[in-house]
Image (cartoon, rainbow, N blue to C red; front, side, top):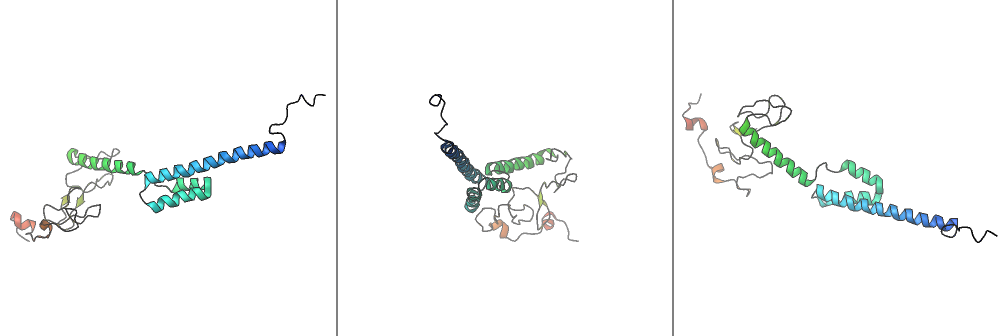
Length: 187
């Protein structure tokens, strides 16, 4: 008597309902998985220019799903390319400020430093570098030592002042010793 008035099972039967729920959950997991793959591809492309590294990281997440995403999060480079460039610019600005202020650029140190210091005596922060030939203090942006005309190797790997890979004439020309130019006797 009440058989026709009862609400029927969603989907018609428990088996059909289970199939519908499984399809919805499966579609949800598939969308999350594909979203993780796309996010990984975008994230790694912002962190490295190496196409092999980009491909490997994306494939790790594609193949291993969410455990692969956890592995990627552990192994990925800590800074994006933009953050690394900003960090380099900030370091360069701090070094230039150091040359003017006479104080260590490390905010936790603040030690007074001399114009010829290579490192901070308090915290050990590298401030400047020395010429390999005459041991004079050089600014970080100099390509040639002004005292002995030695080409200074740059951090980018350039071997010349003009960036062509060929030493400039000033670097290859024979020069007198700095002491002889100032009239200091050898001894």
